[in-house]
Amino acid sequence: MLRLLLYLCTFMALTGAAAADLCTVTGRAVIDFQGRFTAVTDRCVYSMLSDSSTGFEVFATFRERRRRDVSFLDSVTLKLQDPDVQFHLQHGGRVQMNDTQLNLSSSGQTLHGVWISKDSTGVMANFTISNHTIYLFFDGSTAQIHTGTPVWSSVDGLCVNSSSISAQRLDQYSSSSCQIQYNDSLDTSVNCSAIKDHCNTLKESPFSSCNGDVDPTPYINACSDTLCKYPSVDGLRCHFLWAYARACSLNSRASVGDWRSAAGCSSAEGFCQDKVCSDHEFCGEKISGGTGCLCRAAFAYDYKQSNTLSDPTVCSQNSGSITLIGCLLEEKGVDFSTLHLNDRSCRGAMDEEKHMVTFSFDSSSTCGTEITNNGSQITYRNTIKYQNSSDVISRQDQFYIDFSCQHTQPETKIVAFNIKDSSVVVIVKSGQWNYTVAMKAYSDGGLTHALDSTTAVVLNQKIWVELTTAGLDAAVIAVETDSCWATSRDSPSSQPRYDLIKNGCAAPGDQTVQVEGNGEGTSNRFSFNMFQFTGSSGDVYLHCKLQLCVKRGNSCVPDCSGGSKRRRRSAGYGDPAVISLAWTQ
Image 1 (cartoon, rainbow, N blue to C red):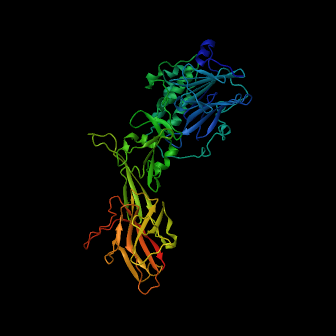
Image 2: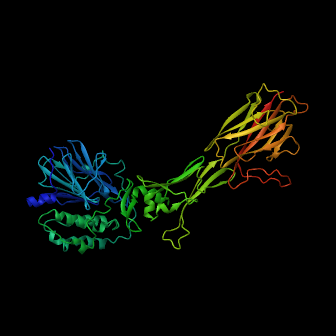
Image 3: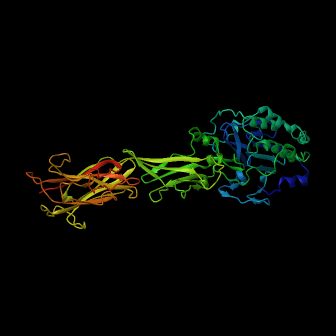
């Protein structure tokens, strides 16, 4: 049976009583009700206080921050059995009741018998169960659990006995990798001797006035244990002093006065209050000043080992994208909003939940993408950069990240068909590319009367042939008919051979040949007057080589104006596809 209680300060004012038992969890330290100190050395979830008779439990989650081998208290959860509800106390003063985010204030509210409130120092909750009062405080780094009465026999957890750490690990709430141990390189900037002197200020004035009521030894040990391994950043220099001062304030007989001025610590407001970070981040001090969401060490390790700020580039046929890790940018003091692609109007899109920044281009928005071809691959290349040429000075490092997409060029495809089929469509698959090639013959220049097996074709009759593709980006790729020739047998390499198109232009030996639209788009056509081979059976096989050409920066249209150097070869894209069409007399 739960019932509403006033917060501790009111409780103490009315009764004049001190907190009967106090447990402090700060950094990776657990200081239990008996004042015993134990360090949590992994990143698991542990039971702090539970009652087997009523089913309530308070458990704490530990995570790493800047180093993989030093863990910190990350969140606290209050779990009730009747009703079945969980209150999750998280960083930034956020509180969730099951999956519902709560909007709290200092005036507080009662939910399922739990009174809960939030102010500038942190989140407070209290409830009574089986005539026992439980008070809980969490500021994002330190949790304190205390009771209005001495600990009773049915309770367990690290707050009761911090040495039973392995027995209190909650595997059902922990990640499968939480027990992996790391050994990061030593931080040579840490002066452990100076750290111990700093931690021992808890024995000096004004803290010494509380030493008789609250033993400073476990707090000093907790302070030294963490800060001799971890840099004194993110408010940690005052972190353990604050935990001790608050423990003293919960004892009606103790007071430490204005300890902040004496220790050179800032106001009592919770560090990173109201700052919301993603699961792979924690809130810390940025090199440029202020606070921001920085990468947890285990998440960032592989990126830093490979000296990269992004995931691999994602490529498709006509597009590419790259995602930068927002917390890595924060660590380097880079404002993502100042970054752009080659085209300055192309900026990154921030995922507000995951804090990832994605830059992308496609055929409709190329963003200054450069396209090159080395004969075997086509490469799309762009650059993420910071540049503001209008500024006289800059306080940001020059920032350049090149990323590219490479596609294997299409393979040669040899296709043969008889005119009785009118036309053929062939699906070509090569690497990332997937497109179709079609060849069709017509008896008119408007391409409205297709030839088939019922169409009579006579000698010297003009024939139009259209070559088309589908599935290629017309803004980037053009289809170029490199050559067409006829043979009396189905093999393209057989003899005799008669040329109709050579090097993209009408063969000079046949004045009936006309080529239209070659290299201009994804289709072209040509015409010629029908003929037959002398002394053959009457079969004529027409073969054409199609070449895909990268349009950007290249001329894909053959220069057929004449002269010994009449044509500058364009940048061909892959081996040509040979397509054959047959007439049988």
